[in-house]
Image (cartoon, rainbow, N blue to C red; front, side):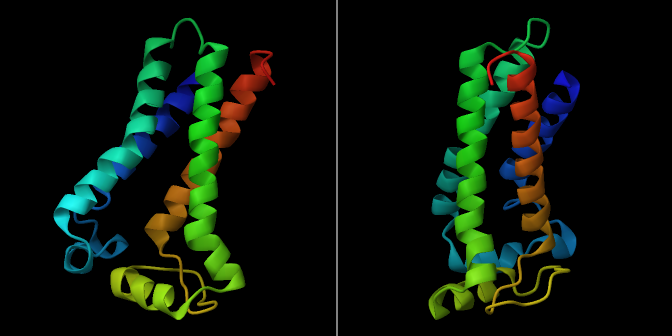
Length: 154
């Protein structure tokens, strides 16, 4: 279970660090991103968003032979839980329940040329890369819940 957690966390941190900076074919559109979000703001967002998950990964590596202490599991659950809530608010709530026309236009500008496999709903089509990242976040949260349960914390 610990190796699975470590792998998921590593993949998550790498995606957070690189998905807005490295060309990934039709999975991202760096030109549109740079056109609408200044590089300085994007860098700040990348670093702030990645920091708690990089710290979580570092703790998992540090405690790999001992098992995560309860306080680290709780911090990780909080970080991944907040990320799931943020992903729901930014993508899935607008997709299922609707959003402002401004957000629809903004999403089309940033993600309109990226790959997607979901049908359009309420003007929104979550792209494949974001959908995969969201599934990864939920998967990591579920593994953390299992780790917490096995450690007697939950």
